[in-house]
Picture 1 (cartoon, rainbow, N blue to C red):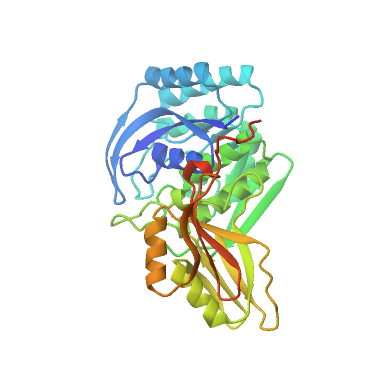
Picture 2: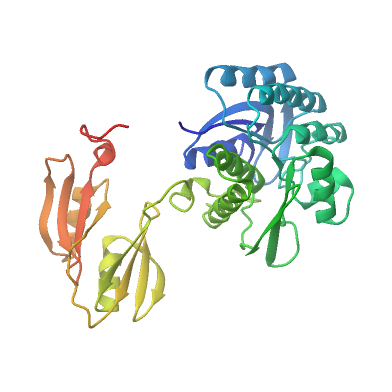
Length: 390
């Protein structure tokens, strides 16, 4: 069953945070995102110019509509819109938890946009306690954590919330000074911490929304709380590195480009072949259209494909290469690619051919004899007519 994630949050017209970031995150990670929109905002990377709260009865109607028909495996709560809406949503989730006691609920207590615009008034923040009462985990940043408890020390603040509300609290260290960052998951009987280096980017809009939605997705798949947080952190960090650089302020992160880095189950995302000449191998694979991302001459080179998988060449001048495995690189414009490479002098063992297994393939070898296929399979790669169905 695909994980069904109900997202209760506001809409961001700029697509960087809120419902839009949540949907992108859940979709990329293989879940089905359902939404209950709590507010409509007019915003971009620079600021928020308007906020229109959605009436509480409409928020509840959205929740009831999707849960009654589609079902739900986890809930993520973001911007809530008003104090009355927070109370009503909490009451509805309390009822839902009676039917589904193990339902994970992730609450991101959104108070201020990345641009600095306020997204929750004092009354709404005061009503957050009821949402934390029903939540599995709350994910405040440092200013939010301080606002929720008036405690100066983050750990003391988190422990206070855990004690008062019974939910776990993730202390997010992104607002700390310096390059070294630390996050800490505080549970009733355990603490888990993660360390990392700050990623140098101004494109940080939507990081909190993305993190909370990823945690909800992984919890829905059955991960433990610490594992869900750890994997969600990795997703956010890769998305920060893949930020597209849009807008003149705090730009969105690149959830859509986190393809094979985080997910459930084994992922085939790296292949290594043996070569005997570094410069010759690099020239060949760059010529194919791969992007070199690691250069360690004369021993090793790594390349990235358009799909996010990586291929590397380990150089051993004394090795005799035996081509026992073929590497397949799918190209939507197969014939054009083969024509380009052939004109550049790349020899092919055969050009594009339609095969009985519904793929179109061209075959060549790298400078050391490793077999390479450029091919186009489309849906026939994963969904041939003879696919074994479970």
